[in-house]
Amino acid sequence: MLSFREAQAVEDLADLLYDFLPGSGNARTSFPIAATQAGVGELWIPGSKRPAIVQLLTGTLERRRSNFTRLILAIVRQAMTYRRGKGNPLSRTEIDRLNSLLPGVQFKIPELLDPDFLNSFGESKPRETPAQATMLSAMKAQELTVSLIEITTLDPQTRGLRFEGFLNELFAGFGLAPRGAFRLAGEQIDGSFKLQGDTYLVEAKWHGPQIGFADLMTFSGKVAGKASWSRGLFVSNSGFTTVGLEAFSRGRQTNLICADGLDLYEVLSRKVSLVDVLDEKARRAAESNRAFVPVRELNLRGG
Image (cartoon, rainbow, N blue to C red):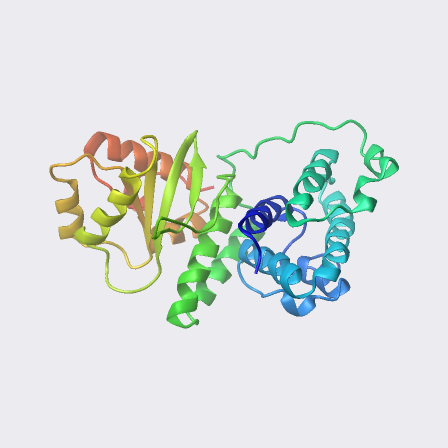
């Protein structure tokens, strides 16, 4: 089992490598092809891309550690081809970041530290922060739609984990810097993301009855127990009860905004910006103390 330091390094590596290659749909350059080239093809688990990257890195380190260098080099080599073809070549900054993270899993890769290789990128330039208001590409929206549909075919336990992974990919697609699930002092937080400088903690429920007052209060308490600037996003695919929402809005200031399955569908099918959706939900919550205002009531234009 990985140490806590190694597990955190894997999460950071997954964030960095996410944009290196596609998770599927490419016959020449993709994560599963790189994994096969490195002799760890069976460790790539199809599905949401970021959780699959974490699983690939973790499985290789735990079960095929001697193949880890080969895996990273295969990913980098393919990324050089893939990204150049997309008009967004791999940068020196990204390689420098990769080299700074690898010691966290007790690796240094000479090929990636070679001065001639590094100098081939020219001067290192600051990596641009992804624009939060950009729309998803048609291909990415379709990929996420397929992923969301596939979740309905899974067993209940797997559905929850895959739903969290789906949300992380969605947040990443809009430049919201998501982080996966973490546990603090016995309580589970399903993830977090950043929006316009604010940090949001995430609670995600795929299936079951609509969320009522008790669940809203429980998550609100988790958020209130963190830093004063924390906010919460409660995503329930099944939605929320009217009675629960009304009770939650009375007598307290909300520190949550909420989204349901139809909201996710609107973002993907109508090409509504998730950033605009969350911004407007937060504004409505500030104005009315309503934690949940459906996307269909926000009067946002799709792309």
